Image (cartoon, rainbow, N blue to C red):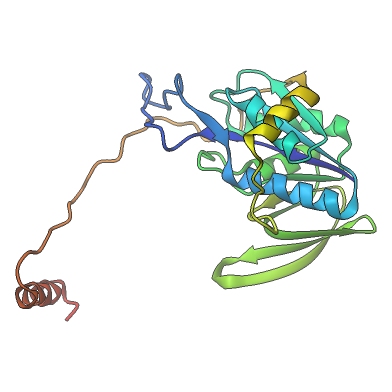
Length: 253
């Protein structure tokens, strides 16, 4: 089975992000790029399927700072093939990402394409369904379990309210992984360094970074504090009395 995992790199939210001078985007000049959390689960699910059913896992990532580390870490987790797509992806939206990656994935002739169900910078929709549209393949999102048998994939899909559904999808297909069947495995730094010596990253050029189809951003704003917490001081009896008074004012009591 030929499994392809699409990795999206996102700005690290631990770092302070600012709006650029144009006012319609983030200043990503010094941004630290990390693997999207859900894509890490997609990678883990791909490795689990390989261990269970055999086959190969190919990991595809855009050419952003930190991509090499992400790809070599995937190799340390037992990915077979590493591909870095060359192009200016700094401001690329998911429409452009899907078009660029679809051409490469077609050539890979994948049986199963896995990607994270969403990312924190998905301003124009999730990458998975957009990729499926470009490939003209079925898509199932919010997946938390995958089994493959006789050219078909049995999917466990989560719905709001704790509901689960099980459905069968013919391969090839695109799946948006919400959670792998086990947490993403940890690999030691020494193993990643070993992968750097024994694995190689293929570089392919992006054929199309066309962003058309996404909503146009007119202006971005930093969130403003609208109110502040009020600290109630005093003895327990005094605090209780003040709380009761506030609840009565709000109509709760």
